[in-house]
Amino acid sequence: MLDSLRPTATGLDQLPAWFLRLAAPVIYQPLTRLFNLSISTGTVPRQWKQAIIRPVPKTPAPTKHADFRPISVTPVLTRLMERTVVTRFLYPAFLAPPTTLSFQDQFGFRPTGSTTAALVYTLHTITSLLNSNPFVIVIALDFSKAFDTVRHSSLLHKLAQLDIPGNVYNWLLDFLLGHSHCTEYNWQVSALREISASIIQGSAIGPAMYVVEAADLHAVTSSWQFAV
Image (cartoon, rainbow, N blue to C red; front, side, top):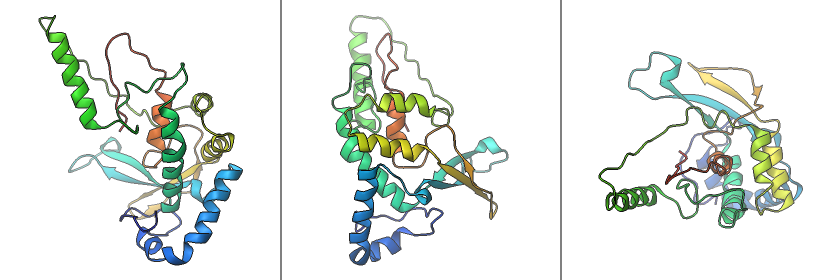
């Protein structure tokens, strides 16, 4: 994992990806022990739960706060750990969900989902409906601030229904508790403030957890979802 690190933004720990990649032959053993210990005890190091928000302009010439996208940057090691939890535990659980949750209409951040699959499904659905209907109405909805409005209690209730080990659930619980962030803007950094809701947009595990949060949204007609 360290060998395949790509250039990416650095978190508050100031450990850049290029340094971790070069130091991999020396640090891979203690990091492996740290990762395994974190999973087995269901504990996330405090510094891994601290993010820095660097506003990214959504328009060529931003003039107001709404013109920026608040992307949270967590440490590179945090994202490596999150990616491990997602690929080894959450994705397999998505393939065999409980009856209360469904991932069939979610095409983003699933092992078998992609933008291509979403477009193929949409085209197939519309073409099939046109065989017996004179026209088809497509309604597209964008959930504003979807990541920021997730309640931890609701998310944890749904995570508990997935087929994941107890220590992994405890790890996810600890990951959400005590999470904090600060904002860097115009070369100034604010103080850290604790997050009591939302999932981290810009983290490796945030999109997968939003997929879990939206897994009980059942449409009365044909639909599909895509978390971005």
